[in-house]
Length: 109
Image (cartoon, rainbow, N blue to C red; front, side, top):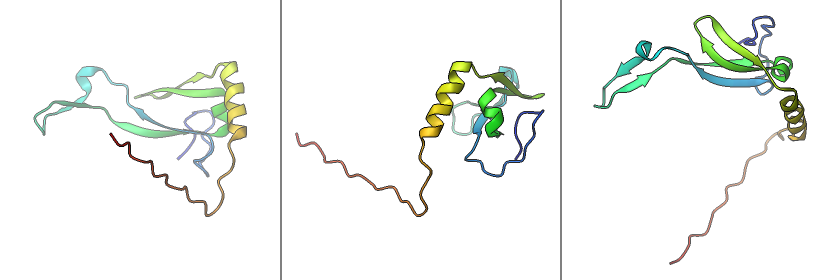
């Protein structure tokens, strides 16, 4: 997988860095696949994962996927500051860490 920014195209070494998004192909309604296998009509469009490297993620966000490629739009400056602050607060995963399950008590009527 490579960066969705056509000017970057960096190879994805670690998908936990940057931005990974599942995007549906933008199609006119009459070009979507329609199925009625279960009796109900289903409208489906192809979807695909796209990745932006960490550097491109600071500047760009993925808007939509078209037949020409992924459309990017700039992130607002205030979003960049908020995102970088929140990302810095996330603690790195510990090796061997297993989340604990919590059992909630049932309410008695």
